[in-house]
Length: 344
Ligand code: NAP
Image 1 (cartoon, rainbow, N blue to C red):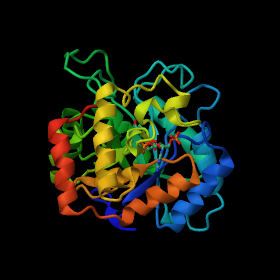
Image 2 (image 1 turned 30 degrees about the vertical axis):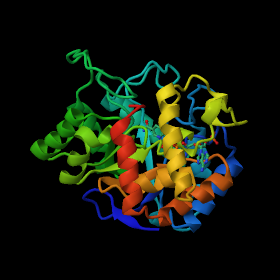
Image 3 (image 1 turned 90 degrees about the vertical axis):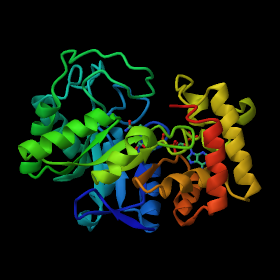
Protein backbone atom coordinates (compact mmCIF):
# COMPACT_ATOMS: atom_id res chain seq x y z
CA UNK A 1 0.00 0.00 0.00
CA UNK A 2 1.17 3.53 -0.73
CA UNK A 3 0.35 6.56 1.38
CA UNK A 4 -0.15 10.16 0.36
CA UNK A 5 -0.41 13.38 2.35
CA UNK A 6 -3.95 14.56 3.03
CA UNK A 7 -3.80 18.09 1.63
CA UNK A 8 -1.45 20.32 3.61
CA UNK A 9 -1.82 18.24 6.82
CA UNK A 10 0.77 15.95 8.35
CA UNK A 11 -1.60 12.97 7.91
CA UNK A 12 -0.65 10.25 5.45
CA UNK A 13 -3.61 8.35 4.02
CA UNK A 14 -3.60 5.08 2.12
CA UNK A 15 -4.23 5.45 -1.60
CA UNK A 16 -7.19 3.11 -1.11
CA UNK A 17 -9.84 4.34 1.31
CA UNK A 18 -12.53 1.98 2.57
CA UNK A 19 -16.04 3.16 1.68
CA UNK A 20 -18.83 2.15 4.03
CA UNK A 21 -22.19 3.10 2.58
CA UNK A 22 -23.47 -0.46 2.20
CA UNK A 23 -23.13 -1.19 5.93
CA UNK A 24 -26.53 -1.36 7.55
CA UNK A 25 -28.27 -2.06 4.23
CA UNK A 26 -26.50 -4.68 2.09
CA UNK A 27 -24.00 -5.57 4.85
CA UNK A 28 -24.44 -6.56 8.49
CA UNK A 29 -22.38 -5.33 11.41
CA UNK A 30 -20.32 -8.53 11.44
CA UNK A 31 -19.62 -8.15 7.71
CA UNK A 32 -18.63 -4.52 8.20
CA UNK A 33 -16.14 -5.57 10.88
CA UNK A 34 -14.75 -8.32 8.66
CA UNK A 35 -14.24 -5.79 5.86
CA UNK A 36 -12.50 -3.40 8.23
CA UNK A 37 -10.16 -6.06 9.59
CA UNK A 38 -9.18 -7.20 6.11
CA UNK A 39 -8.67 -3.68 4.77
CA UNK A 40 -6.50 -2.70 7.74
CA UNK A 41 -4.43 -5.86 7.30
CA UNK A 42 -3.82 -4.78 3.68
CA UNK A 43 -2.51 -1.40 4.87
CA UNK A 44 -5.64 0.76 4.55
CA UNK A 45 -5.71 3.44 7.27
CA UNK A 46 -8.46 5.63 5.80
CA UNK A 47 -12.22 4.99 6.21
CA UNK A 48 -15.04 7.10 4.79
CA UNK A 49 -18.47 7.27 6.44
CA UNK A 50 -21.37 9.75 6.59
CA UNK A 51 -24.18 10.60 9.02
CA UNK A 52 -26.69 9.80 6.28
CA UNK A 53 -25.48 6.23 5.56
CA UNK A 54 -26.39 3.53 4.71
CA UNK A 55 -27.58 4.11 1.17
CA UNK A 56 -30.30 4.25 0.02
CA UNK A 57 -31.10 6.56 2.94
CA UNK A 58 -34.07 5.63 5.13
CA UNK A 59 -35.21 6.91 8.52
CA UNK A 60 -35.08 3.43 10.04
CA UNK A 61 -31.47 2.69 9.04
CA UNK A 62 -29.89 6.16 9.25
CA UNK A 63 -26.73 6.14 11.34
CA UNK A 64 -26.18 2.38 11.26
CA UNK A 65 -23.02 2.72 9.15
CA UNK A 66 -21.31 5.00 11.67
CA UNK A 67 -22.62 2.81 14.47
CA UNK A 68 -21.00 -0.31 12.97
CA UNK A 69 -17.76 1.58 12.40
CA UNK A 70 -17.95 2.83 15.99
CA UNK A 71 -18.38 -0.62 17.54
CA UNK A 72 -15.26 -1.73 15.64
CA UNK A 73 -13.31 1.44 16.43
CA UNK A 74 -13.90 0.95 20.13
CA UNK A 75 -12.02 -2.32 19.99
CA UNK A 76 -8.96 -0.87 18.22
CA UNK A 77 -5.91 -0.38 20.38
CA UNK A 78 -4.48 2.43 18.26
CA UNK A 79 -7.20 4.89 17.23
CA UNK A 80 -4.45 7.41 16.37
CA UNK A 81 -3.23 5.27 13.47
CA UNK A 82 -6.60 5.52 11.72
CA UNK A 83 -7.95 8.38 9.65
CA UNK A 84 -11.72 8.46 10.08
CA UNK A 85 -13.76 10.57 7.70
CA UNK A 86 -17.43 11.39 7.99
CA UNK A 87 -19.84 13.90 6.50
CA UNK A 88 -22.65 16.24 7.41
CA UNK A 89 -25.56 16.16 4.98
CA UNK A 90 -26.13 19.20 2.75
CA UNK A 91 -29.47 20.96 2.25
CA UNK A 92 -32.13 18.34 1.79
CA UNK A 93 -35.72 17.40 2.47
CA UNK A 94 -34.69 14.33 4.46
CA UNK A 95 -37.01 15.18 7.33
CA UNK A 96 -35.66 12.37 9.49
CA UNK A 97 -32.43 14.32 9.84
CA UNK A 98 -33.03 17.35 12.07
CA UNK A 99 -36.37 18.01 10.36
CA UNK A 100 -34.62 18.86 7.09
CA UNK A 101 -30.85 19.41 6.97
CA UNK A 102 -29.34 22.88 6.49
CA UNK A 103 -25.65 23.73 6.76
CA UNK A 104 -26.07 26.31 9.53
CA UNK A 105 -24.03 26.47 12.73
CA UNK A 106 -26.62 24.85 14.99
CA UNK A 107 -27.25 21.89 12.69
CA UNK A 108 -23.58 21.26 11.94
CA UNK A 109 -22.83 21.10 15.66
CA UNK A 110 -25.74 18.76 16.29
CA UNK A 111 -24.76 16.53 13.38
CA UNK A 112 -21.15 16.29 14.50
CA UNK A 113 -22.07 15.45 18.11
CA UNK A 114 -24.36 12.68 16.89
CA UNK A 115 -21.67 11.26 14.59
CA UNK A 116 -19.09 11.28 17.40
CA UNK A 117 -21.50 9.38 19.61
CA UNK A 118 -22.21 6.73 16.99
CA UNK A 119 -18.52 6.46 16.11
CA UNK A 120 -17.59 6.13 19.81
CA UNK A 121 -14.62 8.42 19.36
CA UNK A 122 -13.59 11.88 20.61
CA UNK A 123 -12.69 13.28 17.22
CA UNK A 124 -13.29 12.90 13.49
CA UNK A 125 -10.12 13.25 11.42
CA UNK A 126 -11.79 14.57 8.28
CA UNK A 127 -15.23 16.16 8.46
CA UNK A 128 -16.76 16.75 5.06
CA UNK A 129 -19.69 18.79 3.79
CA UNK A 130 -21.58 16.06 1.89
CA UNK A 131 -23.06 18.41 -0.73
CA UNK A 132 -23.62 22.16 -1.08
CA UNK A 133 -26.44 24.27 0.39
CA UNK A 134 -26.90 26.25 -2.78
CA UNK A 135 -28.54 24.82 -5.88
CA UNK A 136 -25.81 24.03 -8.35
CA UNK A 137 -24.45 21.22 -10.49
CA UNK A 138 -23.89 18.06 -8.49
CA UNK A 139 -25.23 14.48 -8.55
CA UNK A 140 -25.05 14.53 -12.35
CA UNK A 141 -26.96 17.73 -13.02
CA UNK A 142 -26.10 19.15 -16.42
CA UNK A 143 -26.51 22.59 -17.97
CA UNK A 144 -26.47 25.53 -15.62
CA UNK A 145 -29.40 27.60 -14.48
CA UNK A 146 -28.29 30.29 -12.09
CA UNK A 147 -30.62 30.56 -9.11
CA UNK A 148 -28.82 33.32 -7.21
CA UNK A 149 -28.39 32.65 -3.51
CA UNK A 150 -31.79 30.97 -3.31
CA UNK A 151 -31.87 31.47 0.47
CA UNK A 152 -28.83 29.25 0.98
CA UNK A 153 -26.78 29.39 4.18
CA UNK A 154 -23.50 31.01 3.14
CA UNK A 155 -20.31 29.02 2.80
CA UNK A 156 -18.88 31.51 5.30
CA UNK A 157 -21.37 30.48 8.00
CA UNK A 158 -20.76 26.81 7.25
CA UNK A 159 -17.00 27.21 7.42
CA UNK A 160 -17.15 29.22 10.65
CA UNK A 161 -19.30 26.51 12.24
CA UNK A 162 -16.70 23.95 11.19
CA UNK A 163 -13.98 26.17 12.66
CA UNK A 164 -15.70 25.93 16.05
CA UNK A 165 -15.61 22.13 15.81
CA UNK A 166 -11.89 22.26 15.02
CA UNK A 167 -11.24 24.62 17.95
CA UNK A 168 -13.15 22.29 20.26
CA UNK A 169 -10.99 19.37 19.10
CA UNK A 170 -13.97 17.44 17.74
CA UNK A 171 -12.73 17.64 14.17
CA UNK A 172 -9.14 17.73 12.94
CA UNK A 173 -9.52 18.67 9.28
CA UNK A 174 -12.21 19.70 6.82
CA UNK A 175 -13.20 18.52 3.38
CA UNK A 176 -15.90 19.20 0.81
CA UNK A 177 -17.85 16.83 -1.41
CA UNK A 178 -19.95 17.07 -4.59
CA UNK A 179 -18.55 20.56 -5.07
CA UNK A 180 -17.96 22.69 -8.13
CA UNK A 181 -14.86 24.75 -8.99
CA UNK A 182 -16.61 27.92 -7.73
CA UNK A 183 -17.51 26.26 -4.42
CA UNK A 184 -14.01 24.92 -3.91
CA UNK A 185 -12.53 28.31 -4.71
CA UNK A 186 -14.90 30.04 -2.31
CA UNK A 187 -13.91 27.76 0.59
CA UNK A 188 -10.23 28.38 -0.15
CA UNK A 189 -10.69 32.14 -0.52
CA UNK A 190 -12.57 32.44 2.78
CA UNK A 191 -9.99 30.46 4.72
CA UNK A 192 -7.17 32.53 3.35
CA UNK A 193 -8.86 35.91 3.83
CA UNK A 194 -10.39 35.22 7.22
CA UNK A 195 -7.85 32.80 8.64
CA UNK A 196 -10.39 29.97 8.82
CA UNK A 197 -9.50 26.26 8.60
CA UNK A 198 -8.61 25.18 5.09
CA UNK A 199 -10.32 22.38 3.19
CA UNK A 200 -7.90 19.50 2.67
CA UNK A 201 -9.78 17.37 0.14
CA UNK A 202 -12.68 17.21 -2.28
CA UNK A 203 -14.76 14.03 -2.51
CA UNK A 204 -16.44 13.82 -5.92
CA UNK A 205 -17.38 11.00 -8.31
CA UNK A 206 -14.57 9.84 -10.58
CA UNK A 207 -14.39 6.73 -12.73
CA UNK A 208 -13.90 5.66 -16.35
CA UNK A 209 -17.51 6.56 -17.14
CA UNK A 210 -17.33 9.97 -15.46
CA UNK A 211 -14.10 11.91 -15.67
CA UNK A 212 -15.76 15.33 -15.46
CA UNK A 213 -13.56 16.14 -12.44
CA UNK A 214 -10.68 16.55 -14.87
CA UNK A 215 -12.29 19.50 -16.64
CA UNK A 216 -12.40 22.16 -13.95
CA UNK A 217 -11.33 20.59 -10.68
CA UNK A 218 -8.19 18.50 -11.28
CA UNK A 219 -6.04 21.60 -11.70
CA UNK A 220 -7.54 23.11 -8.54
CA UNK A 221 -6.86 19.91 -6.61
CA UNK A 222 -3.19 19.91 -7.55
CA UNK A 223 -2.44 23.64 -7.41
CA UNK A 224 -4.34 24.14 -4.16
CA UNK A 225 -3.10 20.95 -2.54
CA UNK A 226 -6.57 19.58 -1.79
CA UNK A 227 -6.70 16.29 -3.66
CA UNK A 228 -9.59 14.22 -4.90
CA UNK A 229 -11.09 11.49 -2.77
CA UNK A 230 -12.65 9.64 -5.69
CA UNK A 231 -16.03 8.05 -5.03
CA UNK A 232 -17.91 5.43 -7.07
CA UNK A 233 -14.68 4.34 -8.82
CA UNK A 234 -16.55 1.40 -10.39
CA UNK A 235 -19.64 3.42 -11.36
CA UNK A 236 -21.74 1.48 -8.80
CA UNK A 237 -20.11 -1.80 -9.89
CA UNK A 238 -21.01 -1.32 -13.57
CA UNK A 239 -17.37 -1.17 -14.69
CA UNK A 240 -16.85 -4.74 -13.50
CA UNK A 241 -18.94 -5.69 -16.56
CA UNK A 242 -21.37 -7.73 -14.49
CA UNK A 243 -24.45 -5.91 -15.75
CA UNK A 244 -23.57 -6.24 -19.45
CA UNK A 245 -26.18 -7.74 -21.78
CA UNK A 246 -29.00 -6.82 -19.42
CA UNK A 247 -27.69 -9.15 -16.71
CA UNK A 248 -29.20 -8.62 -13.26
CA UNK A 249 -26.83 -10.32 -10.82
CA UNK A 250 -28.58 -11.45 -7.67
CA UNK A 251 -28.13 -9.17 -4.66
CA UNK A 252 -26.17 -6.55 -6.62
CA UNK A 253 -26.89 -2.83 -6.10
CA UNK A 254 -28.50 -2.08 -9.44
CA UNK A 255 -30.64 -5.21 -9.28
CA UNK A 256 -31.84 -4.29 -5.80
CA UNK A 257 -32.35 -0.55 -6.26
CA UNK A 258 -33.56 0.20 -9.74
CA UNK A 259 -33.97 3.88 -8.94
CA UNK A 260 -30.18 4.32 -9.24
CA UNK A 261 -29.92 5.38 -12.88
CA UNK A 262 -26.64 7.26 -13.13
CA UNK A 263 -24.64 4.44 -14.70
CA UNK A 264 -27.34 2.55 -16.56
CA UNK A 265 -27.88 4.34 -19.91
CA UNK A 266 -27.38 2.60 -23.25
CA UNK A 267 -24.26 4.71 -23.78
CA UNK A 268 -22.91 3.64 -20.39
CA UNK A 269 -23.41 -0.01 -21.37
CA UNK A 270 -21.76 0.48 -24.75
CA UNK A 271 -18.77 2.29 -23.25
CA UNK A 272 -18.45 -0.21 -20.41
CA UNK A 273 -18.36 -3.04 -22.94
CA UNK A 274 -15.36 -1.37 -24.60
CA UNK A 275 -13.44 -0.98 -21.33
CA UNK A 276 -14.27 -4.54 -20.31
CA UNK A 277 -13.01 -5.86 -23.65
CA UNK A 278 -9.84 -3.79 -23.31
CA UNK A 279 -9.19 -5.26 -19.86
CA UNK A 280 -9.73 -8.77 -21.19
CA UNK A 281 -7.31 -8.09 -24.09
CA UNK A 282 -4.70 -7.30 -21.43
CA UNK A 283 -5.65 -10.28 -19.26
CA UNK A 284 -6.84 -7.98 -16.54
CA UNK A 285 -9.89 -8.08 -14.35
CA UNK A 286 -12.09 -5.18 -15.62
CA UNK A 287 -12.86 -3.92 -12.11
CA UNK A 288 -9.19 -3.96 -11.15
CA UNK A 289 -8.24 -2.09 -14.31
CA UNK A 290 -10.90 0.55 -13.60
CA UNK A 291 -9.70 0.96 -10.01
CA UNK A 292 -6.01 1.03 -10.93
CA UNK A 293 -6.77 3.83 -13.38
CA UNK A 294 -8.31 5.93 -10.59
CA UNK A 295 -5.68 5.00 -7.99
CA UNK A 296 -2.83 6.61 -9.84
CA UNK A 297 -4.24 9.79 -11.35
CA UNK A 298 -1.97 12.62 -10.17
CA UNK A 299 -4.81 14.68 -8.67
CA UNK A 300 -6.18 11.76 -6.62
CA UNK A 301 -5.28 11.55 -2.93
CA UNK A 302 -7.25 8.36 -2.30
CA UNK A 303 -9.68 6.07 -4.12
CA UNK A 304 -12.76 5.23 -2.03
CA UNK A 305 -13.62 1.65 -2.85
CA UNK A 306 -16.81 -0.15 -1.85
CA UNK A 307 -17.54 -3.85 -1.55
CA UNK A 308 -20.41 -6.00 -0.39
CA UNK A 309 -18.51 -9.30 -0.48
CA UNK A 310 -15.08 -10.34 0.72
CA UNK A 311 -13.97 -11.55 -2.72
CA UNK A 312 -14.77 -8.10 -4.14
CA UNK A 313 -12.88 -6.44 -1.31
CA UNK A 314 -9.86 -8.71 -1.82
CA UNK A 315 -9.73 -7.92 -5.52
CA UNK A 316 -10.30 -4.19 -5.04
CA UNK A 317 -7.53 -3.96 -2.44
CA UNK A 318 -5.18 -5.78 -4.80
CA UNK A 319 -5.69 -3.02 -7.40
CA UNK A 320 -3.31 -0.95 -5.26
CA UNK A 321 -0.45 -3.04 -6.60
CA UNK A 322 -1.53 -2.89 -10.25
CA UNK A 323 0.24 -0.33 -12.41
CA UNK A 324 -1.26 0.12 -15.84
CA UNK A 325 1.31 0.17 -18.66
CA UNK A 326 1.57 3.28 -20.84
CA UNK A 327 0.19 1.49 -23.90
CA UNK A 328 -2.93 0.46 -21.98
CA UNK A 329 -3.38 3.99 -20.62
CA UNK A 330 -3.27 5.23 -24.20
CA UNK A 331 -5.94 2.73 -25.23
CA UNK A 332 -8.12 3.91 -22.32
CA UNK A 333 -7.60 7.48 -23.50
CA UNK A 334 -8.67 6.54 -27.02
CA UNK A 335 -11.99 5.14 -25.75
CA UNK A 336 -12.46 8.17 -23.52
CA UNK A 337 -11.94 10.58 -26.41
CA UNK A 338 -14.55 8.78 -28.49
CA UNK A 339 -17.06 8.48 -25.66
CA UNK A 340 -16.18 11.08 -23.04
CA UNK A 341 -18.15 11.02 -19.80
CA UNK A 342 -21.22 8.99 -20.69
CA UNK A 343 -22.32 9.21 -17.02
CA UNK A 344 -21.51 12.75 -15.85
P1 NAP B 1 -18.20 1.73 -6.59
O1 NAP B 1 -16.82 1.17 -6.60
O2 NAP B 1 -18.61 2.50 -7.77
O3 NAP B 1 -19.28 0.60 -6.33
C1 NAP B 1 -19.08 -0.34 -5.30
C2 NAP B 1 -20.07 -1.47 -5.45
O4 NAP B 1 -19.80 -2.20 -6.64
C3 NAP B 1 -19.96 -2.45 -4.33
O5 NAP B 1 -20.75 -2.08 -3.23
C4 NAP B 1 -20.43 -3.74 -4.99
O6 NAP B 1 -21.85 -3.69 -5.03
C5 NAP B 1 -19.87 -3.60 -6.40
N1 NAP B 1 -18.50 -4.13 -6.51
C6 NAP B 1 -17.42 -3.74 -5.80
N2 NAP B 1 -16.32 -4.40 -6.18
C7 NAP B 1 -16.69 -5.22 -7.18
C8 NAP B 1 -15.98 -6.15 -7.97
N3 NAP B 1 -14.66 -6.34 -7.81
N4 NAP B 1 -16.68 -6.83 -8.91
C9 NAP B 1 -18.01 -6.64 -9.08
N5 NAP B 1 -18.73 -5.77 -8.33
C10 NAP B 1 -18.07 -5.05 -7.40
O7 NAP B 1 -18.23 2.67 -5.28
P2 NAP B 1 -19.48 3.22 -4.41
O8 NAP B 1 -19.92 2.11 -3.48
O9 NAP B 1 -20.47 3.89 -5.25
O10 NAP B 1 -18.73 4.31 -3.57
C11 NAP B 1 -17.67 3.94 -2.70
C12 NAP B 1 -17.71 4.79 -1.46
O11 NAP B 1 -17.62 6.17 -1.82
C13 NAP B 1 -18.98 4.71 -0.61
O12 NAP B 1 -19.00 3.64 0.27
C14 NAP B 1 -18.92 6.02 0.12
O13 NAP B 1 -18.01 5.94 1.21
C15 NAP B 1 -18.37 6.97 -0.93
N6 NAP B 1 -19.44 7.67 -1.70
C16 NAP B 1 -19.60 9.01 -1.48
C17 NAP B 1 -20.57 9.72 -2.15
C18 NAP B 1 -20.71 11.19 -1.90
O14 NAP B 1 -21.75 11.76 -2.29
N7 NAP B 1 -19.76 11.81 -1.28
C19 NAP B 1 -21.40 9.07 -3.08
C20 NAP B 1 -21.20 7.70 -3.32
C21 NAP B 1 -20.22 7.03 -2.62
P3 NAP B 1 -22.79 -4.97 -5.32
O15 NAP B 1 -22.16 -6.14 -4.68
O16 NAP B 1 -24.09 -4.57 -4.74
O17 NAP B 1 -22.84 -5.09 -6.81
